[in-house]
Length: 252
Length: 78
Length: 190
Image 1 (cartoon, chains in turn brown, yellow, red):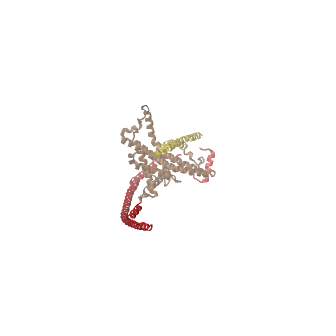
Image 2 (image 1 turned 45 degrees about the vertical axis):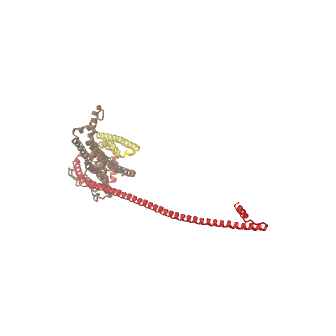
Image 3 (image 1 turned 90 degrees about the vertical axis):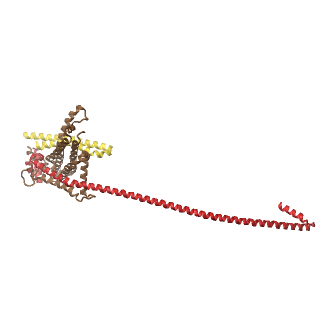
């Protein structure tokens, strides 16, 4: 039934809004093995190149008075560094490279995904789940490693009335395990939703009567998506910092 | 014919799931509106709390994204 | 599936735009995100990407940016210190200038006072001298006047005696010199 729903008879749409997310091999049409270079590979590689261009090439002059590119690199550095320091605390600073890696990858992948005809790697749940699970496992293991069993006090809110504590503990445990789910689906869902909506409006542009309206709508949503691309990367990074803070200081 | 009924149900469910996004919209608006009214009362303290606001937005919005996901699953994957 | 009208529109649009619809979508399930066959591929390339980014950041980018920021901080601190130095120097120079100005002013005042004192002394001497001269002259004049007056008195006495003797003689009297002299002395005193 699922495949049936995507025949040429799809209601009203010239192309399917989800087609842009299909993972295709770069060369040929063969099955996708784990090592096949696909469009995922291409756009992740481009993200790496963008990060290298932004953070390495632009700073190669090491100018005291920065050029435009260098000041972007410095801004990104200062932004993430301050975020880690503010949210996770002074002892969270040594995990700054990990958070910077995640943030730069997500930001670059999101912005590259906004190029027309491109492929948004961060719109795939597989990608975001790997990142969110990595964060979740790291933070959990780190918490137990640093604090041992007393890390469990994170769920036992000692400031609450005694009678409420078991219930609160249950809620806290559930919300703790929902973290990776919401963490990953938030990013993937935001990117997917925005791109799908743009595609839906793009399909409406084929109808002459409403084409101008649809182009206007695409423009507006595109602007929103530029904003969302950055905010989602920021939110992903800042939530990582919040989780890290819980692992470093589990006592409320 | 039977498949059509199932699909109709799925589409109606998808539409209903979209009402959850309205809740997320209300939540996000509430968070930002309260932040703004607090920030206008005490502008000096606002700068330090922007991160907190974004965390709040993220939590409120995640639930809207869940309903969107349910809608998409009903549309395409059921 | 969707209604007949919709599918007709869809076909028409597809024809109009000339898009080859869903050659790929037919193969994939509804949401490409839930196509589990592509998951290992994505995860593998994601891990490769993240590791590459991590290595690039930790080996090259972050140390370099940190060095640049530290260097800039250092430069700014040095410049601030230099500016502070220059400011201190300027304050010092201003103090020296003010000192010189004050010195010059006191010196000028001293010179003025000295000059004034000298002039005063000269003036005093001159006034004294002039006073002395004036006093001498006036004493001389007084003496001369007294002499003249004494001379005049004697002359008057002689003239009066003579005149009185003549008058007495003319009137036919016998001039008694002694009586005339005492009368004239009485009159002149009176």
